[in-house]
Image 1 (cartoon, rainbow, N blue to C red):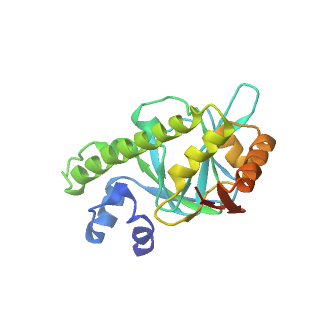
Image 2: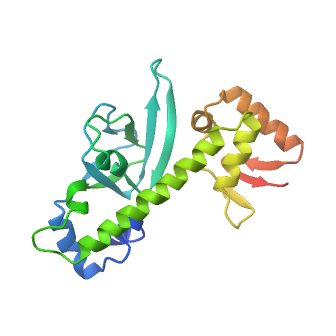
Length: 218
């Protein structure tokens, strides 16, 4: 139990939840965990989602396929991140996305309705969980707005610069979670054209990069 707590305690969903209440909380929420190998499908497009998935280890990618079978990466998540809450909250009968393990992973599944409704025992952590879930949904809305802003840029260069700006922190160098093909899917651009643009930006002294590590120079 301590191992699970250590894996998720940094998640916004569990902020303010003490370890002394953690095991009781998981039992009350009817939670269970499952293991997945890299590239295993966790949720297939069309499946019902009525849960919140918490990543205990590993990572997941969420993709959306168009009518021609082309896949676009919506997001990539890692340890302590959660997924599924938006679809569960909206009571969507069929998932519009496919979620698969990007690494060997262990996922904790929690019934969404048991998070946002108070149980008959009036457990003290329920109010905190509801508050945390509302904050988490707000954070994800902001992140979605950032992606919309990036994709609304007209040129590949503008999309790249907007994406890099959203990824960098106080350090000069930053590492993105995508390889070149995945980044092209995320930005909805042609991979070859994007690679050419990256090289031009490097040659013009705008950026420096090595594999997935970048630095904005101007």
